[in-house]
Image (cartoon, rainbow over all chains, first blue to last red):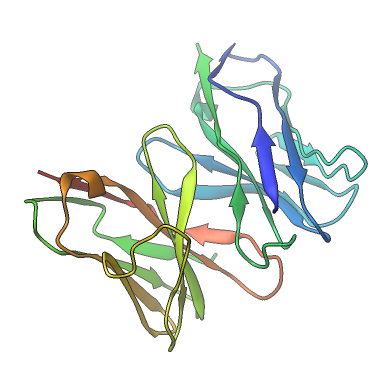
Length: 113
Length: 116
């Protein structure tokens, strides 16, 4: 079945450092890909999305490009802030699982001042 | 934008109590809603798909009689944890897709359930 694999955390960075969180997927068909962010004690918020190959999703300085050839959707940010500390989930919809969202395990990010 | 409201945000109750959690779509209609369970420092586990006007679809291993789901209107789904026990303590999150096709989910803020 469909699956999403994320790099294990936690990831600890200093403020203004460059962030990469790797995400690869396995899916049949043509899924849409998403990054969600979860702050402590809260639900998930959509961070960005891409619906087809080579699409780049971006929001709040975060970017991710849908790479069909490598089945990847890595999250990047050029300069992280303390307020970016959260758990980030890579997810897909619309592969073999229909309209269910398939989540990765999540990657916890700590940003130090 | 689309908002999903989940209530209550925190529940503490005694073992054996039944607890109802509500999930509302505030400015859109949701024929489908999803219920997830999240253990500490883990990902979301899909429990069931709630379908307006019909029975919920449960994922394998989820007890239907334990986790009752009702989706009586296009804006409200409820999850009732029946005869809750300490092992049911968890963070429960609902979500609803906005629009058709491969649309992202909009999530409630979650309900932290603690059974004493």
